[in-house]
Image (cartoon, rainbow, N blue to C red; front, side, top):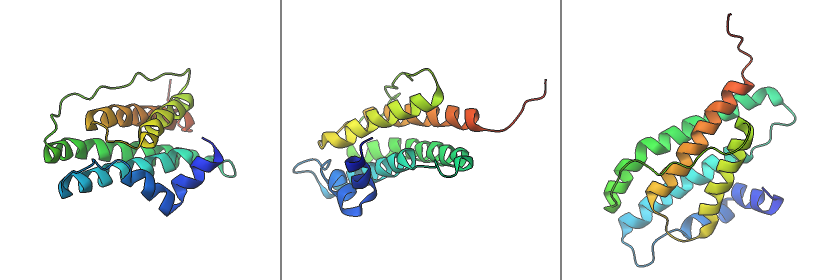
Length: 153
C-alpha cells in the first residue's frame, strides 16, 4: 500500500470521500445508509491491515485478532443489510486465498478489498462479503502463525 493511499485511509475526510463514492446514484436514504455503513467497516478493516507494528512486533497477534473479529462482525451483519437493499443473499463468492503464507494472504486480501473501495461505484454486497471472508480467514491464519503457543506433542 503506497503512502498516499495509507494517508487517505487514516485521514477522516479522505476515507469519507471513498465511502461516499459508493452510494448508488439516485438511491433511497436506506441505500445510502447501508452503503455508508458497509464501506465505513471496510475502511476500518483496511486500517487494521495497514497499521504498522514494526516498532513493537509483539502487538501483531492483537492486530490480526482485531482484524479477524472485524471481518466476522461485518459478515454477521451483511445478510440483514442485503435484505434492507433487496439484494439476494446466498453463499458469498469467496476469493481463493493466494500466497504462500498467511501474511501474504492478508496483504493480497487487503489489496482486493482496497480495489473494491477504490472502484468508487456501487458493488454487490455478496462480492464484498467474499473478500471480507477471505481477509478474515487470512487474519486467523496470520494470528495462528504469530502466536507463541506451543502445542504439546
